[in-house]
Image 1 (tube, rainbow, N blue to C red):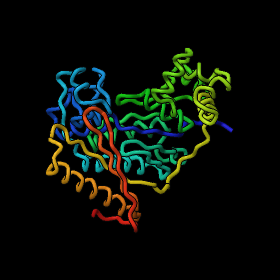
Image 2 (cartoon, rainbow, N blue to C red):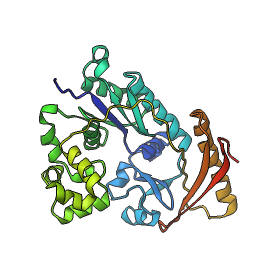
Image 3 (spheres, rainbow, N blue to C red):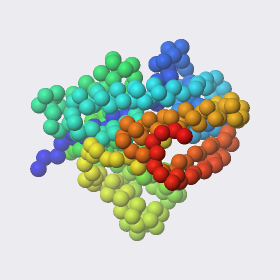
Length: 309
């Protein structure tokens, strides 16, 4: 059976920051960060200085003194993220959304209508750019794992199509941190033993890899390193939670500041629950301070709710 690259992974580039530059054209081409005490997202201009999401605001300013912090427009993020996914839905019903700004799509069944997978990917990118004014990168491959990696290679604002006949040559030359499941800690552990590329990981003895990441993770990473990924597109899956976040920036941590913010976040979460016809019983609040210290508190209610209290 012939293997074809029909899986698309579409990922909106620097999404929050790109939306802010869309809403305020004076920010285009400038290093900006969404947030304040903590960077929620950074534009590519800011990333070129080393600024990244999750970084403290003071560290980001150290790296990029000309950095511009902006408040987030979360309703616009949701609106534009939904609109981008709707573009994919116009081509195929087999769309699996995995976050506000990225999704997989299987276009095997619609090539007779819209052309080859690369042509469909180009059409999606063109429509998102023209209709929404946003950049989007797309990877095309025969597995979900490789399509997601290809979209990362395609950034910013690009398209990468991986030929199944040469996919291992493409995959094995890439840095190991592009793989699903390889975060900073695992990357550092692998680097200590000289493993920096996916090909080097693929050639590791099984026992050696399992000693570093555990048996289950070792088996999964080894399979993915050889692009063995049987996962199919899941068009329907019930979310187990709903959340929302907001940055206070330089506003003082006083009740008249954080109480309206909490009410706004509660209303956003409740709206998402009602849209999915789902209630919830456990309410969790997580606060991250400027020094990156976090505090989490939760309470389980007597009965499920879907309205802010």
